[in-house]
Amino acid sequence: MKGLKTVYICSTCEYESPKWMGKCPKCGAWNSFVEDVIDTSPQAKAAAESKRGYSVGSDSHAVPLDKLEADSCIRSLTGLGELDRVLGGGLVKGSVVLLTGEPGIGKSTLLLQISGILGETRRVLYISGEESSGQLKLRAARLGVKGTDLLVLTETNIDKILKECDSVKPDVLIVDSIQTMFSPQSASSPGSVSQVRESALSFISKAKNDGISVIIVGHVNKEGSIAGPKLLEHMVDAVLCFEGEHQQAYRIIRSAKNRFGSTNEIGVFEMTDKGLCEVPNPSEVLLAGRPKKVSGNCAVCTIEGTRPLIAEVQALVSTTSFPSPRRTINGMDNNRIFLILAVLEKRLGLRFSSNDVYMNVIGGMRLDEPASDAAAALALISSITDKIIPEDLLAIGEIGLAGECRAVSSLETRVKEAERLGFQRVIIPYRNIEKRPIDAKIRLIPIKSVYEMISLLSGDNGGDK
Image 1 (cartoon, rainbow, N blue to C red):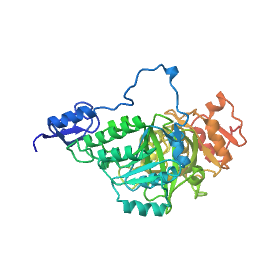
Image 2: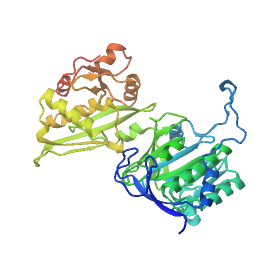
Image 3: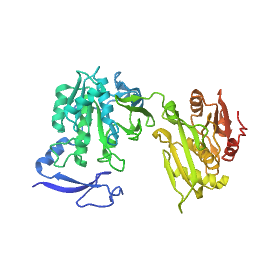
Image 4: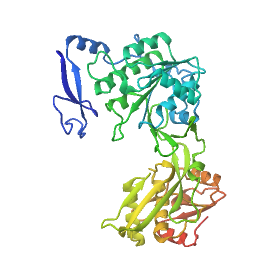
């Protein structure tokens, strides 16, 4: 068709090329080019110029910072405490939140539940580009969602959606999903780089100009990244990642970006036949069913944002039947475990190089904090020596290349959480006690290096406070 041109756009930096390229010459990303169609007609160029960017006020002027006023009702609770925790205290007026996750993880279920709760006090407009109105009604009946102020629109045309927004004037706008939306001004198909960018820009402009809280659902590709241009993540105010295994009932919402709160907070949910239920005490859930009198099993307390969580680290070391031993690690950084294995083999003389090593964090949790090194090392030592770690023992600490146990942050918060859940002994770095004594009712065992871990498993718990 006259005026249409096929180009290839980098999904990371939006660099345009007339032909496909394996590596982007601008940002260096590999296999990031996707095919797109651009309308080069004068009418399309004029429409694009008129929509370029967005404004948060037609008569805006520069104002001194001291004279700015904050809205007293700028935040509103979603009704789900775990989600409010991740958002930093609730939905912010005029903000745009991007919710991502794998297909079938529960994004639409979560948003429909939120819509039902918010619909009791505020006007909510739910835009569905993937399900029909009948399908939404069946899902709402299963979840028990009702409300006269919960309005549903099954539409993918951006112009029609924005026109309906001007008509009903919602307080909250939910879009499921951004990959199904399209703008008539763009000739490319829905889900392409240009369509995702134009659609997101339209919703962001609407949110800023009218003070509407917008939640957008974004799909992920097979690599686990958000589908569409990388610019999408920079444009929105918050990016929430919905994680979890389909075979397990627990789901975790993690904040990857948040302009109005911490990026380290997580929310824990359980998927049931009635929808997603909050898990206010994840530590007890993660420790449920913990095996007794079995080697290779150690508890650790990690900090996610402001919340202490106790997780269970399991290790299995077995004789290999392969020329190159296997290393299978779930829930922890592979390179971090390889470092710990090298330290234990060099400093303690344990022959991990001739054994297969399997490590797992129970409950689908992911431990990226260095403070979990001591628990991983203790579980590995326990498994290869077949010595049982006491059930009431918890380990906290970072392991260095020399085998030293380094200090960690928020130790007092971790110790209190262990005390609350019934642990009687906690392995901690010696430097933490040296800097600041901790008042605890349970037994603290300060250690300086991995050399002392062998004696702990042998029953000699000397050096405790």
